[in-house]
Length: 354
Image (cartoon, rainbow, N blue to C red; front, side):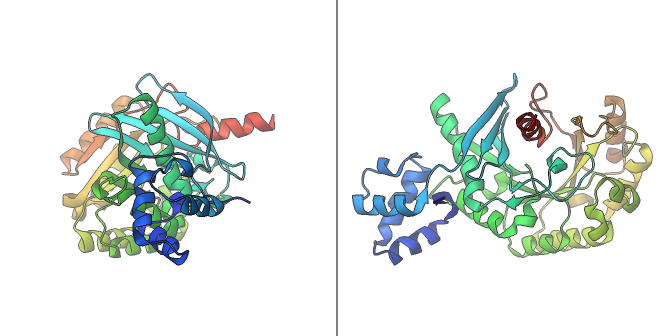
């Protein structure tokens, strides 16, 4: 029997579950502490928890449902983990080192159906959503790695930008956010967490209504419908008019800044014309907008796309700045390993089929 991950329960859910099985509320506090502060890897390591409770937990839950399949380490300290799920599927998780702390990029789905034509994540269609426990466990496995290697280091930031569309797995995403943000657990501040969406407008409204301090990023990549539809099929369902209406609602509701991700594709979306269109698109939102220009990591299967030249990226940046748009060029991590999201997974699956 494949047991459910214990990490899939919020503190309140764990409390309710234990009490429904005849245990006092304080047991949940003890178990939570062992999981997230002492970070045990087996229920039997919970020393002040009764044997009866430990047996109950072991009968119904698992602490470890992910198996490390492959690990790549970059010279800059970036580590890409390829985890194998209980059903045999593979997912990627990335640890990145910055001056401000350690950030982990998590995956939310097995494969992706959004269909961005330049992206390695969508090379394999979505087969299922990850459970909230499987998403939390990615963070825990990285933290367990840090506990072994660097005793004083801890995950301080999270970006939900791995394989899949987070807002297409909304319920499990929200549960994950509640677990990692819990002040009695990992206590990763909401403002240190960023969720990225390709533009599921209806879910942006829901996310705004949550009144969370979690940051929102939009994978935009084009400033007009014709171009965006040609590289991101999601734009057929949620064209820029619908997307920007949702963005306006989010800004009005939360008064929080949105980051617009813009991958620079040579000869596709990196001309001055697109820069001016992008500035116009964001002109009435400039005080709460930030454009993140991203050098493209080429993918073998998408040979039609290449990285924009540095000169083109810098000229695009300067055009936006002159129009009053806050923007920056993303610092690259892990360029000496399979840098593109989903690339390591795709290569390993190909190798297994060969």
